[in-house]
Image 1 (cartoon, helix red, strand yellow):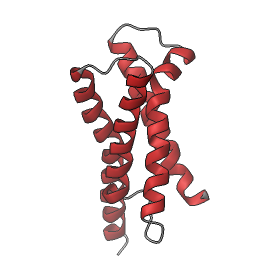
Image 2 (cartoon, helix red, strand yellow):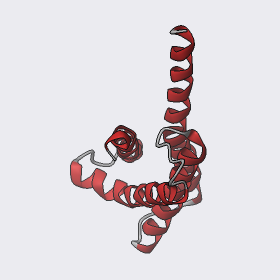
Image 3 (cartoon, one colour):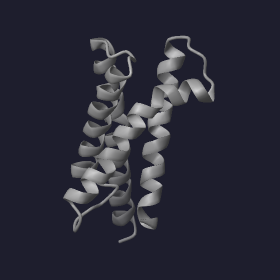
Image 4 (cartoon, one colour):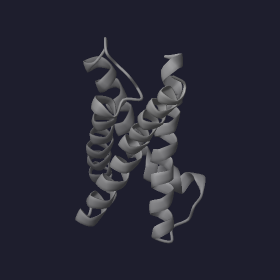
Length: 127
């Protein structure tokens, strides 16, 4: 698990940043309880995504892979997060779902794509 910790920390930080940006764009208070209230459903979804991906791809699990890890983590984060928001009476307006889909996809898949490109360039440069 130690080798997966950096990727997990990046995912957690990005979900918290997503929550903070959302609160900021709606002029909501940027304090720890407020950000936690916004972030927790998505952090729960992130957890589901990590466990699902690690379970499905046990032998080939790569926490930094955009496919399948990034895609599955993104979709679980989004779907579970939205379901938990709906169940707990938080907003799930269509515009919010679209924005969350785009931002979480950009964040959770995007950093993995960038990391992979950077690693390949570094490998080519060292040859």
